[in-house]
Image (cartoon, rainbow, N blue to C red; front, side):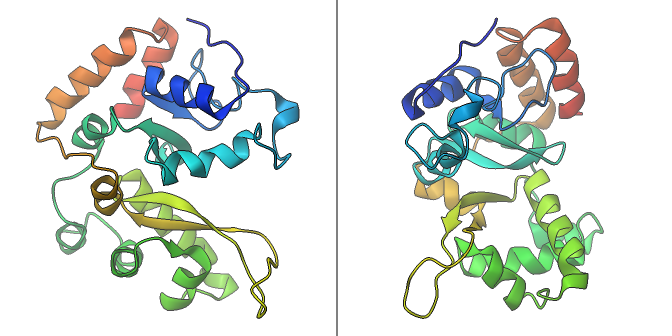
Amino acid sequence: MRQPIIHTYEEAVDVINEWGLLPLAPLFEEYPSLSGVTEKENWYTDTAQDPWKWRTRFASEGVAAYGKFMKKKAVFISRGLLPLMIAALGSSISVKERYESGNISRDALHLYSFISEEEGIDTRVLRVKAGMKDKEKKKAFDQALLELQGSLDIVVSGTKEKQDGKGEKNGWSSTSYETMGAWMKKHNIEVLKMEKEAAKRELTEHFSNSASEQAMKKIKKAFG
């Protein structure tokens, strides 16, 4: 099924709700993405029609969880499909327990502790608090964030403007993060208790209703 080109935020919300999973940029062959269903000339225009502005609005309004959840790429997961995705791809074991069993890095545990202490923390502030502000530590910092997003432990909660001493905008906005649990609680999304394999079967059924056979091959592979 080919997704028509859209022009408004409201139309984008409908697309996310219809598909359940919408990548920011092309991720699966013959499958829609936000960049693929919008007009290129509207991007980075800082207008109401700018899809780049929509991405954090989806997250802040509870329309969809936003983060690099799949293949280290940014995707939107609708609030309706999120519990099933977490059951299939997430973990019921705490981050601390996973670290103790060698299944998550020390850096990821370190960042998660700061994010959980200050939900919605600015990336710039997080780097300073984690002692990873130095240039040579940026790669490790970015990798730890990817690790936590890939396990659906954290989510992008929005962006925060960089301000000078007078409170005026000064430089690029920075991404902010919060734990997935806090984001779901804030937007009244309940955790689904389901076995991984059962959740994967339900996801396969969901996507097979709209995705092409070629897209399904890639989606199933991403689910593992």
